[in-house]
Length: 478
RNA sequence: GCCCCCAUCGUCUAGCGGCCAGGACGCGGCCCUUUCAAGGCUGAAACGGCGGUUCGAUUCCGCCUGGGGGUACCA
Image 1 (cartoon, rainbow, N blue to C red):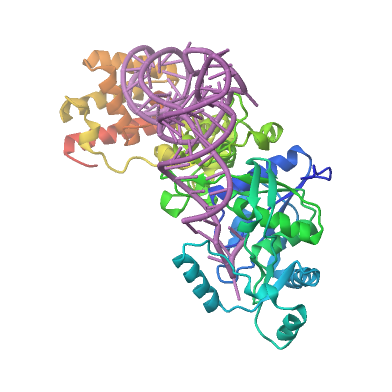
Image 2 (image 1 turned 180 degrees about the vertical axis):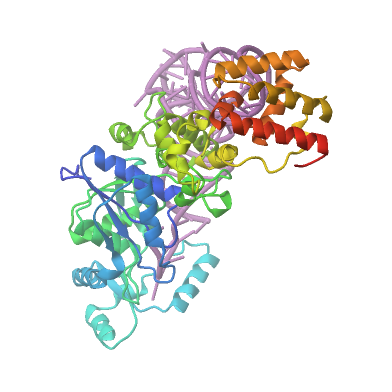
């Protein structure tokens, strides 16, 4: 394998059959990190040669997800379905060189052939019946309009060796290589042909792709050699698995990258999470920016074994990144999820919730009471355990009276004063503050009470306390 | 069936012949505390099995087992 001294150019080549999922995003990320470390280019290629599985919306979704993650690609994405003539010309070249041949076998015959092979417990692969058809006859039948595919002629003895940057040296026995299809009867190329042609056309230096391609990599090496093109370096990335050790799929809950955006995850956190799936810097550091990842990344340190996505860790990481945001930045991101509330109004509130958020989605319900008074009170939560409605109402009234007469609305004054009130009426601060908390916020789990009261303002606090007290004396609800 | 890859706590991993096998998530306990978090301290938790090689194997080799992938006119 030649050590490519040429400029580093890599590509991420999804097929547009759905949205970008975590596994694909990781492949794209590793490509991106690797190439930027080497000041190379990152290309995007759309592998849409399968007309049956094609999903029109897919490409836009994939591009949106990549953009959200911050994985910007260079140049205009290559779309394979637009390059049909290029692949046909390439197949023609191979035909002329004898490196490939036309196969006229019908799908039915191939199925029958495989059934027999299965029955005899032999490896299932093409029996090369059409490999011996003379070129002149083949040309004549093709010209006559007979349907055919083009197959690659594989060597039947010897071995093919691949030096993979992640998997190490892999040796394949050539006798096990199938004469796979390069050009389908509809004139579209298979992945194998298209990938080789396009990687060459775009001067790809490193093929960094999913581990699923490893078994056919030997055939790919043979193909590129048949064309006489320089071999790129290969790096096969192990799969990302779900908690059940099966490849990540819909049944594992969110898997599409864009769903994480909906779920309130920061792209920085998702990128960081993905980077550590199968890779580690070899140190104990674990929070990196994209820039740092580019600096530290190396294919040699990519784990050759499949990685199970630990979504709990993503939650934790997301919290870490949220805490690293400036209050203004967090306010801006939160405002996008709270229609009608400008970021500037959120900014003073952000310090109260910042360290409590694991996702942005948790923000709105946590902040809601700042903008909307509780619409009803449940005595069950308003009255602390072991207390009764009447004494709770009295406690709220005492608090209201004290606060109503206060001119210094500072956290220090509120805290000290309310503690004194609690002591005076014989309540523990625990119970007292809980009653106030529910009266003011309508919830038992909230940001720090005193600070929240300061932000809410005296009038609003007193109003809510009085309403809650009234609710208790007149019965349930408001 | 055949081919290929993989194998350290539940999970992500450090380790590159001699380590009390380290860290992180999650889980338990303690501290802090007006709730919930966050934070600090702390505990439980791993080298799949059998053979080699070696003075010595988690580490190197083989086999087995287990997991994954491929075996399409899908990518």
